[in-house]
Amino acid sequence: MRKALLILGAVAFIGFALLNLNDPDSVIWVLAYGLTALMFIGALVGRADRRIVGIYALTLAVWMLTMLPGMIEWARLGFPTITGSMQAHEPHIEVVREFLGLLIAVLALAALWRATPKR
Image 1: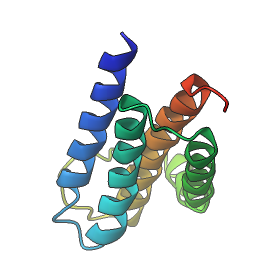
Image 2: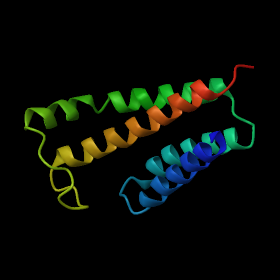
Image 3: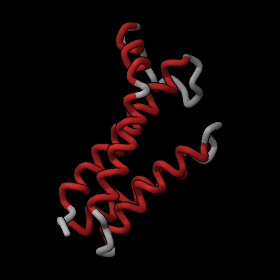
Image 4: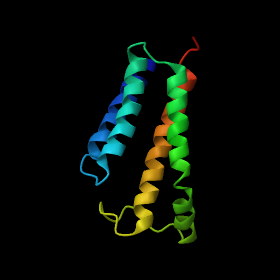
């Protein structure tokens, strides 16, 4: 079961990285999701370092929190749809999508950190 979840995490974040290849700021997103996938691959092959996973999760969490004003603005607007099209015509759409993507990565890394044994 653990191995299957690690494979699922790695494949999911590789997929997220690939989906961001056409993004205007693709380098940063491909790196963010690619490194997250790498953390899962490391755990899969028995090379996970709990400290590195934790530091990386905290780094992404801080980055995510910089987008909190955009999330508050989205709430203030009454949570308008962010799924109308793949193009972000409104400023809040990009911020909300990025925030939620980072939230998924942070939660996945937190679970990985918790499941990685202390050395």
